[in-house]
Length: 100
Image (cartoon, rainbow, N blue to C red; front, side, top):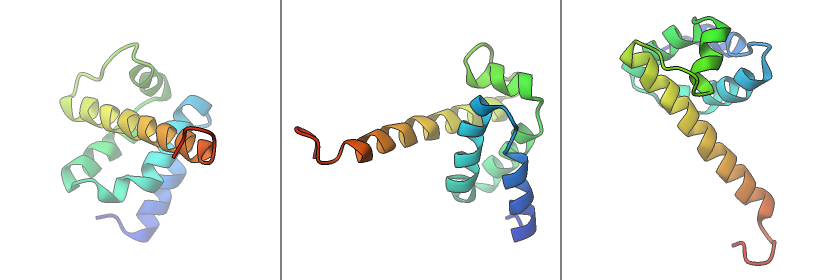
């Protein structure tokens, strides 16, 4: 478990300056990181230390991390982003005809 200061550093490190990475990493860090197992939290900390071009390639599906724990976390981040996108779209459509 990270201290409050360490978590704030992680939040800051999740801001990469590349929009494609920021929209994936910042929400995941803020919304999902604390619910991860200790093993997955450690893997995420390793993932966040990777170079931006590698992260971009992994998240865009151009390649996969060779380390299984990093590949698992890439999948979790993408799954979180897809769920968040779906939820956001649904929330924005509430009240529209045919949407409950």
